Image (cartoon, rainbow, N blue to C red; front, side, top):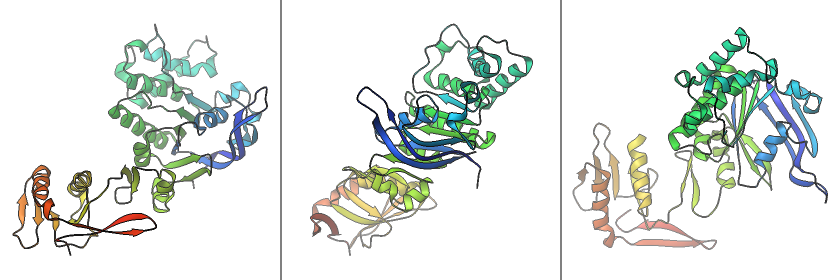
Length: 358
């Protein structure tokens, strides 16, 4: 078991006002470990940013305790906290007249003072932080000339230069295109492994979090926080229950969420790997439920050694097809002869069979 860096017990977060405290979350109990990337998931307004600000000591808790490295959060001075927790916020940094190297150098301010001169050792730490994020070619570029993804990498390098054992990030991929989102998530996962840091981030990028994070925190107002690996949360049903809503369902075969299409037909699809997944996706989009568990004489087989697909038809010769587009066309020709049978269970209609399928 990796060492615990953060422990929260019966934590309540929120705000104090003239009319009394406004509680956002309450009675949260959890731990965060070193050397792991942990992603906090939840709907808008559930209190993810409030929790992050509370853990970062930007606002006080309304109740409960927070221990950082075995010491109460309230026991740290601001100067000590700057050497324990680094924070990367959601907002775009609007910094001008400063290059990347100078920005990353600001991460050394807990050790030098805001206007302090960097020592040779500080400069070496800045250089190493830039290398860790792999943005050496950007070091002399002005901040205002960077893309959103490049700017976010620079902010992460700044947090690394701060040399804190813990890094919090609030929606670090919010403004990025998809390739940049993937790159930042992979970067954070790699850094957690290479540096042994605790990296804790909130995100709306559900699919990426499920593929890259070591631990997932599912946060909602009814159940507080549910914690586990993406795989354990998949197997025990927590993911499917947490995000259950009309039009979205959790696919146990892929371990990811998908659009819940309405199916009029079903057939057997045999095979594995990428081709199997792509055919299944295309069929689902066209109202056909297909997987290897359905028993039928009307079936599709993915050919292992070629890119061909074999369509097995009842009372017809099998067809060998070269693309999913042609496969869909052949199936479409036969739809008029297909009949569906449904049964009602608990008021919900369930597809039972397809004419021509046994």
